[in-house]
Amino acid sequence: MNRPKIRSLSHNELKLAISSLQSKYPINLVPENHFKFYQECVNTLGGLFAEHTAINKEKKRFYFMRVRTADSFSTQEQVNDPKQYTYKPKSICTDIGRAHLPHHPVLYASDSYETAIREIKSPDTDKYLIALWYTEEINLNRLNFLSATDIKSKRLLELFDALIRDIDKLYSNYDDYNRDRVKSHVRAWSDLFLSNNYTLSSTIAHEKLYNTKNPFDIICYCSAVDSHGINFAIHPRLANELILHKVYSAKVTGNDIGIIQCASVGNEGMLEWRQAKPIDLPQNDPFLPTSYDPSYYKK
Image (cartoon, rainbow, N blue to C red; front, side):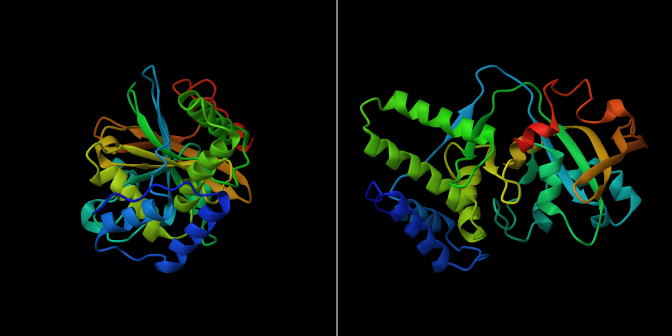
């Protein structure tokens, strides 16, 4: 396939381009040729993919919250099995999601249990199980879709401002006109990835997690239901290296999340449950970053 012609598009042109892509394809169509779909996204948005990446300079741990409804477990044995809190095996991953195609699973997680619960909150249940996974101290190269047009939280706006400053350093000769177009281009890719058209977002994710020569292990993206939260799509390469710190059982009443029990992996490799004490809670747990504060995610 010929390389797409690179064009600089205005904010309105990019908005129309996204609308055109969304209306062209059904929301949950599994593409027969996902690379062709990806190339069409690139071409429609001006011929370049806005690869907003981040990597930590010093090694550190990363933490991820994964939530399931309590009634999604069939037996107590499943509740006690750590494998139940990670990604679906290929054999039963037959659906399409925001960041995956059938038989190409990812581990979906969030950076706080509030966001993780909001992502799957169901009117039919008030009981949830929250798994807290972490990495060893590593350098992690992340692909970010964190620059959506309607972001409001302080920390996401700070991330976007930092990105623009980095772009300014690389292209110091840019005038305001070109700088605005770069901003619009970066935001357009986040807007497209966060749209409700999983045909497009899963195609983009598959290309970047599975199909490129130098694939990413993780995609970070704004929560579609929590304007302050960040979600993750984690390739099995990285997910298989994660360590399960704790699992919490919680009851949700309105906006209140009450943690009732917690569990850790015991000597037999299964979860052992106990009544949660104040020190077990994520905001008090000495193993977690001392700066962990759920209220921060509301800023």
